[in-house]
Length: 426
Image (cartoon, rainbow, N blue to C red):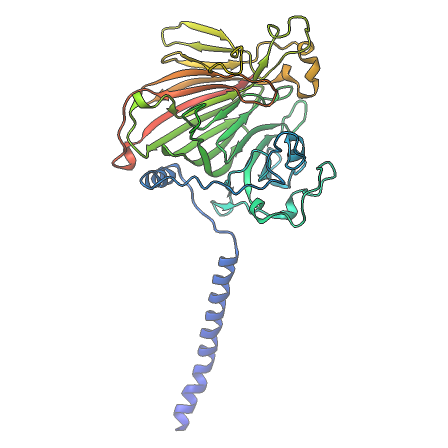
């Protein structure tokens, strides 16, 4: 080795050390990226593409494994979480910007279906996933009896729903406005004294049938826009179709949710064979009104008591809710045809009429109005009413049904587009 060669090698040492340092830094950055929740730029166009691709695959219901300790109790069984106990699991806030607050909810009670929740991060202009952590939820709450097992079963450790609330200025309060679950059910409310009551569904198929196909909400991307609007994007799926969801939430004494769905059929739609395949449903409870107990003025129990539709020509049709007289009677089914707007209404606001059930505040349950409907495929609206003998049943369903044949889409531009405004009011 010559002195010149040795000098060149010595001179190269700093460059070699620098290269090794850069390599170590790059490896460290890659490891850091892998250990950090992934970020994603979600758009309605991208979700429509994903929904189209899913529609070309066989349906996978991804049915969750039963967990008897936290699923709804059966009959008089003490195992399982009832609604009150499930509320005790209330977790840490996912987001709070002094205008909007969000809380992710774990599996429990009827919230069984996994929901991927993503929250917008303005500093990166991307969405990052909400991560499930056992420590975020109060599984040891003393009001949950019998106590839940520790450790919690692995099959219960995931997120299944999200709550969205808003800071109200006058009087100052932080009421919850919206609830969405992986089971495809949502609840919307206006400012207090309004309470959640009638639910909405992000799609329907075979309503009330033994083979009812329950639409699932698989993914949800959440983004505050300003002090008056909150943006939601999502992926909806069932055996019949997959769909991209875009919605804008606006809070108020009468809160609104403007929804657009881009729907991709999994198999051709033959309307004559489909009693209820559509993009929207309302679910409610009607047990009894004054007709059921005429000698007891305090014994009414219902989320809504009448159904109203408005037609494009201005006609209005109103029907009081009722249930079959006998549990063996078939459900009552009424087709209202194509309507412009419709509502499940809680018209009796006299709290004295619900005094036997005062803690649940039936007098302030929401009425839900569906308006501003636009559809690329003709539709009609139906009302389904079945018998019940207890307070916890969703025995009233309103559903939008597509009533013209349609083929499966050849491309992402071929889907069915359906939009509407949902208003929760008193």
